Amino acid sequence: MINMRFLFVFSALMSMFVHSALAGQRLTLTGSSTIAPLVLEIGKRFEQQNVGVRVDVQTGGSSRGISDARTGLADIGMVSRVLHESEADLKAHAIAVDGVSMVLHRDNNIDTLCNDQIRDIYTGKIRNWRELGGADQQITVVNKAEGRSTLELFLAYFGLRNSQIRASVVIGDNQQGIKTIAGNAGAIGYVSIGAAEFVEYEGAPIKRLRMNGIQASTAQVRAGSFPLSRPLNLVTAGEPDELAQRFIRFAQGPDVDDLIESQFFVPLEH
Amino acid sequence: MLMILSKVSSLSRWNIDRTLAPLLRMAGMMCAAVLILIVLFLLREAWPLLGNGGWVNLFSDDGWYPLEGLYGLLPMLAVSLAVMLGAIMLAGPVGLGCALFLQFYAPPGLRKSFRLLLSLLAGMPSVVLGLWGLTVLVPIIALWQPPGPSLLAAIAVLTLMIVPTMALAGAAALSAVPADLVSGAAALGMSAKSRLLYVVIPAARHGILSGVLMSMARALGETMVLLMVSGNVVQYPHGLFDPVRALTANIALEMAYATGTHRAGLFASGLFLTLLVLVLAWLAARSVRYD
Image (cartoon, rainbow over all chains, first blue to last red; front, side, top):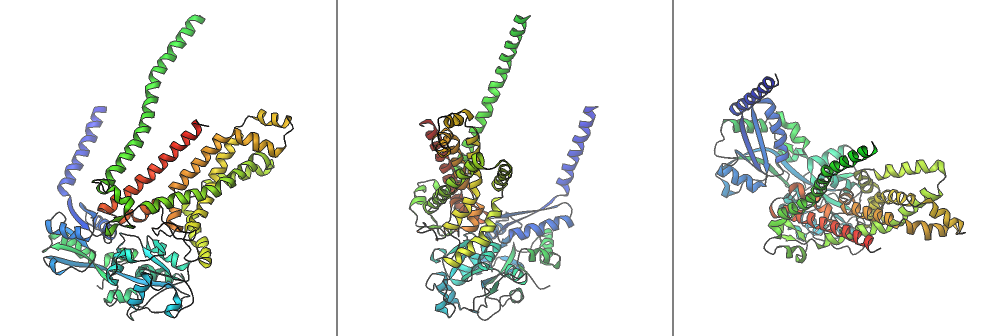
């Protein structure tokens, strides 16, 4: 009797294995750690709608995304920047845009800073808001921890190395940054625009700085006019196969806008 | 009858011993093995950075900029120690005071609720204390001495965190002092103050010391509070108001996005932290032995 039951369970398990092996289609994505959490969520939803498909997401940086897409180790690479000229052999499919905004405390009477001023603040040449026409208050420079994509975007845009920056506070995620700036009237920092916009509407005492005269809003990022922003790309070597193509179209579609917004990125226009 | 019974019982005890002893030995060895495995694991993961003489860089590099290949860990090591020592210097006397109050001075009605309060505080999730530090304490310090997140904030919140640990361990140690020692001292005509200072506390010193070491280990390992209130700037602290980064916060701050040698650098931080705790434990064992 026990033997029978065991056999039954065993054969049921075996048939499940065989079944999934036959029906299982696997899609592997590797690359940027900025995009990976988003693609992980999109992948879960894709799996729900396409029974038998497994979406496998691994991080390792945009450069890994490029090389894995080229060698075929991954079906799709994730690259959180514009492709270089040397990467013209790859095809980029943007799924969202990431924008970073400079953020001040609401009580700060400064409304705009030029790039040179921001560079001088971050390298410690300007240490008091008075030097910029503001109140007599020490500047608290809020920087991001190494490895964060916002730091990378910030450094690349202002042409700085992290060791040149004289930070007063180093923070991890956007929320910690916003709390730090909200609690310090002399603070300056940078966070994802989506996150800043959200907490500002919730009433946090922070404000976003204009960059080159352009308002820091998700609308401007979506329109492509905000300077401190970058596309989040899925890349493939040549034309993607049928499954990869289906996934890319799904990730670009309106069905995942809520996932993109929940990660504080900006969805594309559909 | 008696003979038989005793014979049986001695035989059975023998049997139990025979099976129990290896089991216990195995459990003990497993504990030791886990520690060794942890150290080996940390060594293996940190090896890309430590190997080929790379470990020298951990001491000689000027700063911690993994993306630029600089992996100087010493400032963070110093900060971990400074925060721990600062917190224990404040929490030690306060905690011991709480323990003495609880054990000898609190009225019976208050004693129970005070003990409950301490237990609740000891079990307070550190992230809650950290959040309080970030949203209340740090802005206050920022008004006084900007930027606010600082060595001082870290020491203050950590002190709050380990005072209850210290107090409960101290109270347990004090309650273990035999009552006849205390009444003997009273019978000799010693005042309450001298009884505590010269009889009770010396008799409870081992328990108190282990409470101090427990608190120190807790302060050394604390991550969330430091991440939130210390500012996380990698530098030697030149004053109480400087923002600093400890080894634990370093790992938590950068682990999520670290790859390659950067990741190895974080495991090296973990290795240092483990070694620090081991040194602490060794000192504890030594101080008890030579006492």
